[in-house]
Length: 189
Image (cartoon, rainbow, N blue to C red; front, top):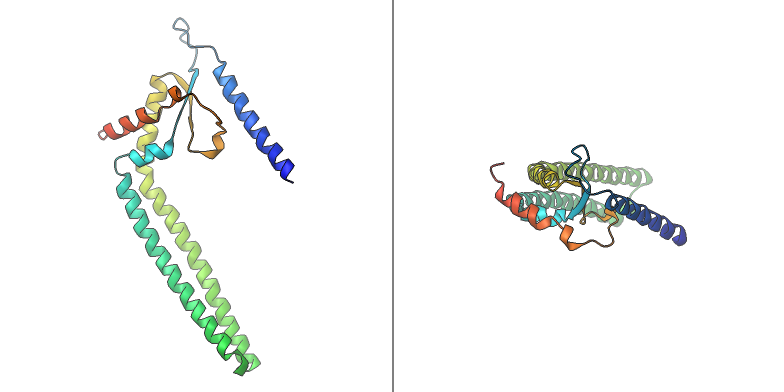
């Protein structure tokens, strides 16, 4: 099982490297050939860019506050369920079979309500995160697209994304500082 997992991982890495090598082997842009498309590649660290984007600290703070409220609500519901379960365990021996079944059904219903509410709050947290981060991500994407076009790049990889399969990269291809500088300076764009 481990061998199959390692083989699959290396196959993915090998495929990624072939794509990168293939892109790197593309012919350089020729000034006399205007129909030839972009040929370079570069990379960024999206996490570093996002953290340096104006408005990120406020959005992150708002999300953290909302998340803490959601977690407090879940914790309160869990405590109510735990208290009810403890009370049931203490009374279980003196309850009639019908009363035990009724209490067990009540506990199961409370547990289902807790799970449903947990899922609802998780969905609300994800939606709130998207809502807060979307303007920042749109701003970053606009800058990335501009720098990619300006530098005649075919692709920009994200080293913060674990699925990019980059195992080594030339630091001169790192556009992160340029993107951060432009995102911070492009408040009017």
